[in-house]
Length: 484
Image: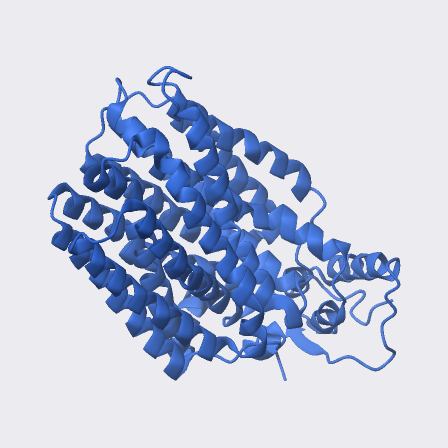
């Protein structure tokens, strides 16, 4: 019987070795299932974002919508605005009611909203449904990132998190390939191809419901929320699964934590942690998230417009340019991810952010003086985003592992919301306006702004980043419920 059996649900002090037991586990089939069932969220997000970019030409040509470039940019901003508000709302609910409940609720919101997008009848209905789709995806970020962080062993946390976030680009590749088929002239009616593309995203999300049924609630969350016996049962079951794979834990004693159980964490305590106790970590997180959000969304949401307006690439061919773009983005976290666990978080954050900024400025200038063709521009994006994708994924890793468990989901939501609100919503709108001018140097100005933000974030990470590699979450960020 565990030492905390019979204790009251809340206000009692419990001594637990659950975090240490989770961190000592070898990588097993259970962890792979967690990564697949929860990490597929980023594939959905990549699918959504890519479809929105790839079908932008079709939306401009749609008999019922006839979008302008500015409306294309606004639709991208509506999606991101929904993601901002959805992340905050669902992030708060995730910390209060648990990880598992919320990653089902947010998936349901996404499914209904993306299917509704396919039924849009004018620009405003399209933007409303894109807003709601973003709300579901934003909520997923909070629930999923916190769950994965709390179930994956510390020694593999960096690489796993980067690869999962990088899987966004598998979705981007699927979206690009789908758009090539669905937007072929003569295959579907002018107003049907883009609608089928969004319905495809909704159909894919149905599969995820079944995968997630096998994922347990986070034992770390349970033990601090008055449910230690449930946490013990889940960890014992995970250990039994690992034992079936010839895992036999060493007999040495494990480190323990003394926690005062609680039902929830007040917003006042969250604010005090963010803006007083951990204000330096907050500044680092904001700089990383805002820079990568502007960098990514300004470029990716408008890349199709660049190809159409400046290179006269037919809208049905956009997917061919997005496929190699997606490949570079996926390979970056896969290849560089291990270095975040070995070389370290701070040096790798500084390196990837700085290289991304320098390469963007150089590529933007070459675009401005009109010396790059569509193919060579795509190759340049592949190289740039090989580094930028690892940088952006590491930003999510940073904000999810450097704040206490009791507020982890809301912290992720806060940084995602602020970073995306400042960088993501502004970026597509601003670049859409700059593209509308028809001036290459105006567009270069937007790229240069993104480069400056990345270089500034690199300097901040090098100076104040947290060396969290291979350390238990509880040693990186002491739980608020911890008692001496």
